[in-house]
Image 1 (cartoon, rainbow, N blue to C red):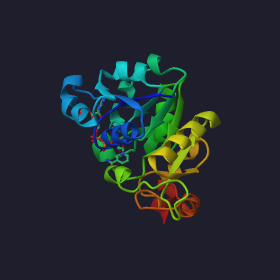
Image 2: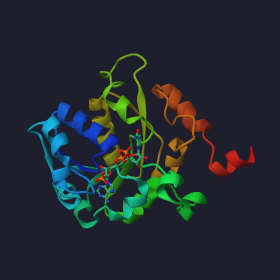
Image 3: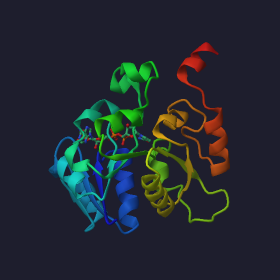
Image 4: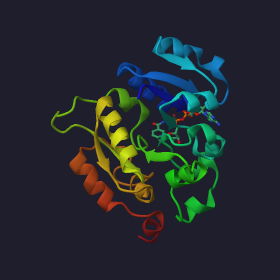
Length: 218
Ligand SMILES: NC(=O)c1ccc[n+]([C@@H]2O[C@H](COP(=O)([O-])OP(=O)(O)OC[C@H]3O[C@@H](n4cnc5c(N)ncnc54)[C@H](OP(=O)(O)O)[C@@H]3O)[C@@H](O)[C@H]2O)c1
């Protein structure tokens, strides 16, 4: 695994590109406005980085990160991502994304929507509950006591193992929430969403998470 493709190069995409380059990966970044608009970020990232279209970033990546406003997930190219591990950082904010009925009624979750859009890819939910700025400031070497942990969820154990290793390289422990359908346990407004947490704390947060319908009743 040598190249990480990024579809989305905003707050989270930019930070993940910085971490990837710092850890020796090549990155191919993309956005909606075109590669030329990413020249300043490419210049900052240096020779391991280039900008491309979303299709080319999808083709180039051994692993590809989808980190766009959720409302745009259907624009993510499907064919070039077949067979690949796809990291999904996305969250649902109706004020930004508009209402998505199957998320409002909680019959699915954000990462399952992306998995349904990319049926031949191995989607792993990750990096959705940490503020972008903290990605490059909260990481610590493996074995550091009280190291910060990040949640993953996914249906493919091998893909989750690869993403856990990447997260470890980036400076964080990992807590596996289970299959994609359990990803709601780290969605917006759950206890683990946002604050700095160790693995032990995050496990408790995942267990204590409530569905929105349950929260509305309380
Ligand atoms: N910000 C955080 O702290 C944070 C933390 C965890 C998770 N998240 C989640 O991660 C996702 C990204 O958040 P963000 O804060 O990084 O957003 P952002 O700063 O608004 O960046 C979004 C990026 O996606 C690109 N994009 C939009 N539509 C696209 C498309 N159709 N094809 C290719 N690229 C496209 C944008 O490109 P253009 O600028 O050219 O349109 C931009 O580079 C969201 O779902 C968010 O909820 C955010």
